[in-house]
Image 1 (tube, helix red, strand yellow):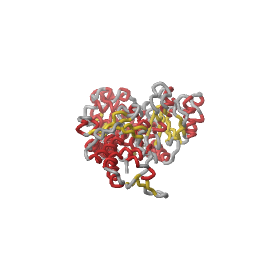
Image 2: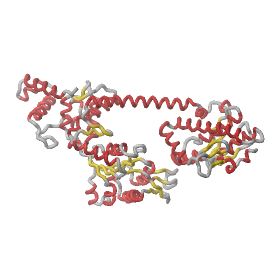
Image 3: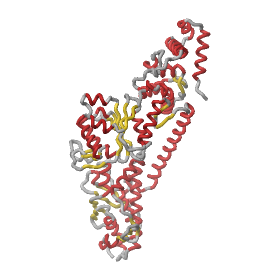
Image 4: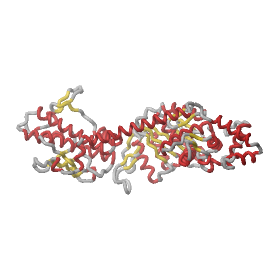
Length: 540
């Protein structure tokens, strides 16, 4: 039997009902190339390009060796030469590419690959590459020829369509002949082992930090609910968390409203993480940060040549969020022209890339957020009413920080713990006066302003606690009032305490001058401060 006699119809054995297929004497599988392309992307995202290339090269090599072994035992070859030559034929019959051998040299085999499935899938998922990408095919050729010739032979790609070359071309040489070519290392196991060891070490370090963070949170405040980065002691935030978890169980579109900095993206992430789509991607885009001319391409993708600079096909964010969640932040900033296109996409569950006639279905949940009052925007003609109701299947309103003062100190302690860990500072808490100033401030920037204030305080703290002087000026100068922000009248002791501490801060902590300014004795002031410090100590 000659290598050219191999035809798929004569080699493929299967039962009409399916179950087990055999190519020659070896069991085979039929795999969709797009699925292999998605596997390639997962390897890139999980392991990085270097380790992914090593895995695919070694997978191809093992497949080549196994094919050579089963080919030798399963066919009546005329001679050994026909078996050695059959590797090219097997690769073509399995659908890898159209292969054209170049020259007749057995010592230096070379081939042109046309319609390479690997180059096609790499372009689809990543666009043009700076290096050749047919790693599995080169690995297959290396494994088959190495086994058939009885000596290590490595095929490297010298040209590749994914890099912009007209064809893919592979050349085979021995390790010695390749010399110090860097690509040879991808056939060595230590390339993968080293990367796996790095990932394992990083995971162990992350787990250690999470355990430490959990212990810190438990020790600081066991009554505070921390969900997806949201601190919810107040009744208002507990309602937000409860609504978020309930809506996560259904695949409805959600509109999150609230002032800038209240944590709308954190709520969106909690919806994603508590949903059946948690295993998919969470893709976020700020509609106000993308120029109008580019927003359509960003969301829906574009075809090659659709506009200047579009050098390759590119999927949009709707496609990138496949089986996950697409978060459109600042939806109120979206131009009217794009609102029409977004509404159509949501109604049809299809998108059309810029410069392309083909429609593509998408499977992604949409969560939108805005700090604008969309009802007023509709009346002003800046937002479409039909899109508003399409987005507002479920609305989650996140209250501003000033309306939930019960959350301020627990949230500040969580933020302090995180900032201290990032900066490697031994700052463990807030002084009583610093905590009081945090409670008095109105927080117009909400959680984002609080986070920035705590980060600044941790960076400046001289001791183990954040003091009033470490806080920003606008927080230090917050003035106490007789009525709390919840509408509850403050007790006389609360007002007295806030007034005394403010006077003490204004006079630089000098107790003698503070007592004189307040018209009380130093001993009286000392007793009051001691009593308030005792009450401010954290519970054990």
